[in-house]
Length: 87
Image (cartoon, rainbow, N blue to C red):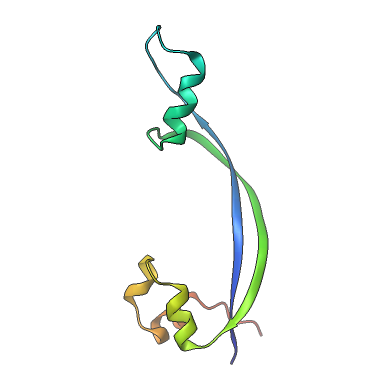
């Protein structure tokens, strides 16, 4: 069996509710969002754009998941849980 990693970017439309003092410039509310200091009020998933794919072996698969929550598992666990098997 061959394994491929497909990369995509997910796009969301987000809304935030920001409260700030009266003496602040209105556009400063955007800084709060840019600095990741606000929780979203609502979000709407707009879809994914596929960037590409590549075939990976076991060693490359481990490299692909470095620094993610998946990195805790071994290769066989990752394949068993995450691989969509196409028939």
